[in-house]
Length: 92
Image (cartoon, rainbow, N blue to C red):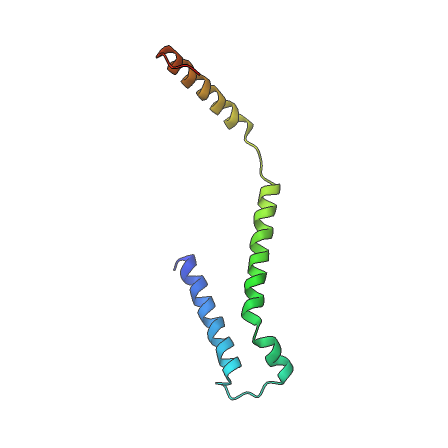
């Protein structure tokens, strides 16, 4: 099972549980305070997931490691390409 399928199954299960609780399909009489929290729960979860994603991206950018060897290799390849193009008559 792919990761997408796992996420979709989890969302389907959570969504069906949320719908069953909010629509009263289970026959449970929830207190009004629980219903007031339950109705906007998907929006809260969406905002929480967005904050988590933003924090993860920010952390990964902050801890990104430079590849000094790869940078030097790329610079030497650029110099070789420029020299080859200069031999062929291109000006920079």
